Amino acid sequence: MFSDNKKPRPMNEFGGQPNRIEKNTKIKGDITSEADFRIDGKLEGNVTTSGKVVIGKDGYINGKVECVNADIEGRFNGELMVKDLLSLKSSATIEGTVSVAKLAVEPGATFNAACTMGKGATSTAKMQSTKKDEPAKAS
View 1 (cartoon, rainbow, N blue to C red):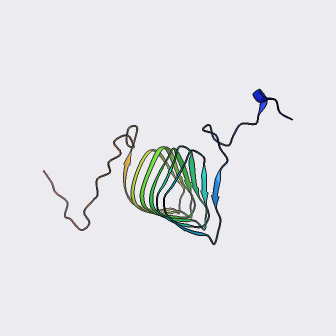
View 2: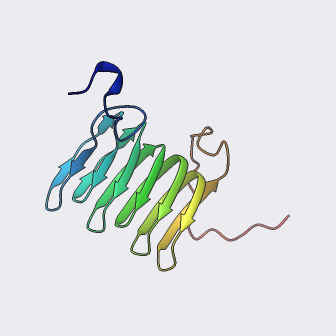
View 3: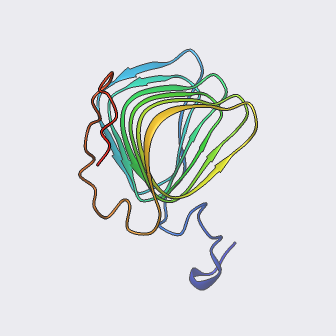
């Protein structure tokens, strides 16, 4: 038995057990949590967490994600706002807009996104949409 001051640390510093959306599970809606999330199924909606989001190899999110860190092996389409590190594995496919402090990309990852990067990138949180097929303007 653990005494009160010797309980095991939770998986993230904010407490709580990690959440999982398993393979062959489809969810439509918005999720808010302080714990980490792992998505191996499909989610259409928004995720807001003060923890980490992991999209597994078979996972897919279509929507908006706000988190501290993210590891992506699967597919993402939408708006991704990561306060610290976004790590894209070789099997990852990203489309949409991304705001991140730090970015790590393995060779083979597909990154088709408008990206704002650096300290304070996510603090300016209002992402501006980009117009496709607009000619470049020179000053």
